[in-house]
Image 1 (cartoon, rainbow, N blue to C red):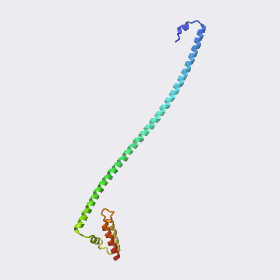
Image 2 (cartoon, one colour):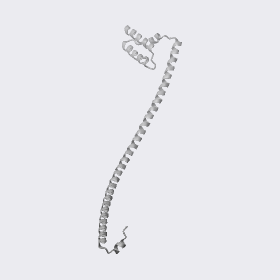
Image 3 (spheres, rainbow, N blue to C red):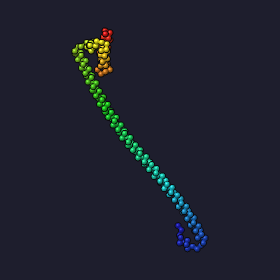
Length: 176
C-alpha cells in the first residue's frame, strides 16, 4: 500500500510526477473496470429478466400440462369405472347364463328320463306335433315353428327329434 503522507511530504518533482502518472493510470484502470462492471451488471440484469420470463413461461406450460394430466386422469378413472362396471355386468351375465344352462340341462335330463318312463315313442310324438296340419300352408308353418324350437343349435334342441320331424314333414307333404 502507498503511504500518502510520505508522498505528500516528498519534495522531489520526479517522484511526484511518477506518482501522478501512476495515479492517473490507476484511476483509468479503475474507471475501465467500473465500466466493465456496469456492463456486466446490465448484462446480468437483462439475462435475469430473460430468465424470469422463461421461468414464467415454463411455469405456465407446467400448469397447463398439470391441468391436462389431471383431466386425463379423471377421464381415465371414468373410463376405468365404466369398464369395471361392464366387466362386473358381464360376469353376472356369464354366471346367470351358466345357471340357466344348468337348469336347461337338468330340465332336459328330467324330460328325457320322463319320456323314457312314459315309453312314448318319438314317432308318436312327431305325429302329435303335426296333427291338424292338413293343408300345405299349415304344414309348412308348423314345420318352420318346430324346426325353430327343436334345432340342435338351440338350448332345447334335439337332433334325433329334428330328423324325425323332417321325415314326417316330407312324408306329409307328399300325401297332400
